[in-house]
Image 1 (cartoon, helix red, strand yellow):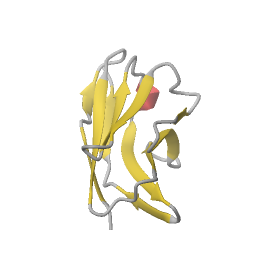
Image 2 (image 1 turned 120 degrees about the vertical axis):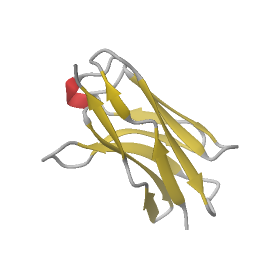
Image 3 (image 1 turned 30 degrees about the vertical axis):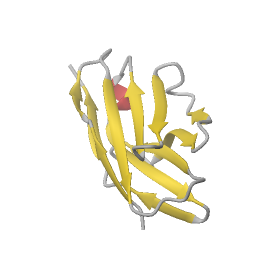
Amino acid sequence: QVQLVESGGGLVQPGGSLRLSCAASGIILRFNVMGWYRQAPGKQRELVATITSAGSTNYADSVKGRFAISRDNAKNTMYLRMNSLKSEDTAVYYCNIHEGSKVSWGQGTQVTVSS
């Protein structure tokens, strides 16, 4: 079983930046897809970005050009660099990992963009 722990959330002003981290532990298959999702109050959880174990990335249109997903396979850690943050980016951010048919989620980290 894989455990995921997110960190790096917090309060930031509009236009600011944050970097989220997701540390994975446990038995992890070599071929997997990791991703960041977010859920704002009263809204459904939505995809932010994904990255395969080979480094291929995919982004939601709302974050393209502002967010960058990356991973360090040696450290089993995934990152999300968020620039030019907007108030609508406020949400709880979750990381997950897909290994075949198995999916694991972290507990989430709050990101609040406000002046």
